[in-house]
Image (cartoon, rainbow, N blue to C red):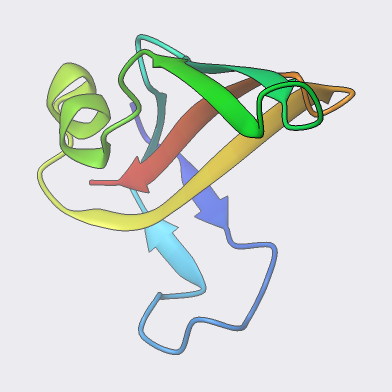
Length: 91
């Protein structure tokens, strides 16, 4: 597959602007967080995390050997439920 990817930002000086034959991969799982705020009742906040959004796992699943860029997309509902997805760009 011959693709050409262009970065959206220029804040990372070591990341090339144009990457020939680059692939974009999404992690096979998402990372979920459930927050139960019991701060005012018991003085604690409970966090429950589940999932894997490792860069190495996403790159290995897509057959990417050299990672140039990684990004996380997050959706949140009232900061109680959060779900994150990892995207990896590389060759």
